[in-house]
Length: 258
Image (cartoon, rainbow, N blue to C red):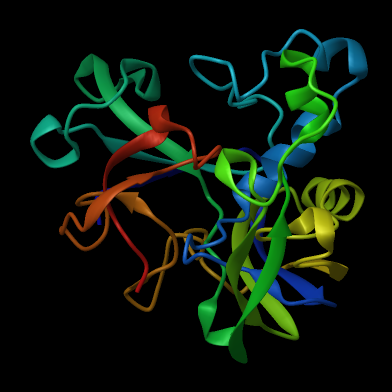
C-alpha cells in the first residue's frame, strides 16, 4: 500500500449506520459517504458565507472545505503514468521527504457503502415531466404539446436496492459527523426528492479496536475508490476520488472496491 493517512488530534475510527425506511435509488456509483458529509458541511455554514461560494453547477473547480470537514485525509503521490492527466487543481504540493514540491492526490477517509448489506434489488419508475414554468420564459404560446416532440413526458426507470441498514467506515470527529448527517442528510441515493433512500436514523459510533485506515482497506479488501496503485497496484477505470463525485475535475485513473 502506498497511501499515507493524516489524522488530526482527537480523530478516531468510526462506524456509520443508516437505518433505512425506503429503497435506495442506486446506479452502482458506490455511495461514498464523504459526499453527504460535505453537503452537510456546506449547509452548516451561515447563509452569508454560503452566498460567497459559487454553485457546483457553474463553478470551474468546487470548494473542498478542507479546514472544516471533520474527516481525516489520505494522500497518494501523483504519478502521471498511472493516474493520467488530471486537473492541476486536484493536486496538492506538500513539504515532505526530500522534495518540497512533491505533487499528491488526496481525499477523505470515508468508505463507500458496504454492498453486502443489500437485501434485494428492484426499480423505481418515475414520470419525468418537462419543466413548463421554465419553458414559458421563452415563448408567448398559451399551450404546450406534451404528447409528442421534444417536450413529451417520459418514464424514467431508476434501479433500486433494499437494505434495513447500510454501513460505512470513516476516520474523524464522531460528534461532528453525527451532527452533520442527522441534521442535513435525510436521505441517500437517487430520487431523494420523491422519498427515495429515506433514512430513519443515523448511528455514528467510535470503533476503538479498529485500525485508522479501516475506511480505506480491510483484510486486503478495498473499501472506497482510490487512485491507481494506492492499494492493489491495478488501474481499473477513470473515476472521481473525492466529492462532488459527478464533477469532471475530480477524475483520475483509479481502482474500485469489489
